[in-house]
Length: 364
Image (cartoon, rainbow, N blue to C red; front, side, top):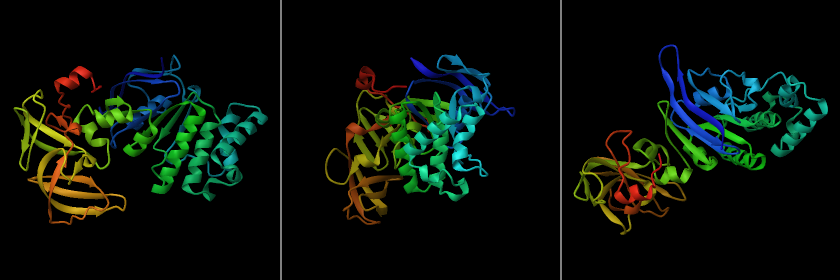
């Protein structure tokens, strides 16, 4: 049974811009759901409508069986963690944690108990008597998390909480949030533009584009069975390679590439999608053709080889000891079991084989 439900949710601004278009989503109690997509896709607007910070144009939001459309943010029993921390600079960190509880007229001993428990769980006991300006970005985000935890809400909302942190701190805080969810088992909705955060944190991921939900699925299903070219290109780093060509009698071809394809795929213009990690220079799988290396990046644990195949370009994720250099030619091979074919266009739907249709591997 859904604990948080969005039904035909729309957001249209006075100038006519539609930020969210007919969003439908059901989230189970205790689930960690991540909204992900490029800037302007509507993910933060959706989160703000759940929080009550943005007015709903059409549709409804239910939390624990209650429609909250007309309910004030303070009455929705949610806690929100913002990108910019939103701490009161004139208060100590202890006072920041206590502020919302005092507004509820909670007894002093209960306030102190909650602050002590939250501070212990986030290892911020030694920071409580300082002020936000005396803390690093990671410490401020811990205080913001603590302020949300002490409220013991029905739903936690996170609006890109790690985007202001450096790379090392982002990884550290990501782990903290995952541990927090495991311990609290509270419903969490998390917004990010970082697909690595989405893949590592979410029980399910909601991919959005231009205000429309493209796909809702587990991280691995999104990776293995994207419903269209946009999702395929957004999930995965580096992004999936796309080669534009055509399917004719069980073969895909374009300039520089000619390879076999499932005969049940529809004939005509098509786009072949191959992830960088599914390409290799050792013989095995299907031979794509001879590629010219343009840029070779040695990352220590792996090598990124950017290449040109005919008129089209791509990137291969290869082993750390790959010896190739820019300007050299290499023969590329790919595991055919990992190929994806899409209809032309940025949002082109994934083309399904008869076997895929039968097994139902592609979920919308």
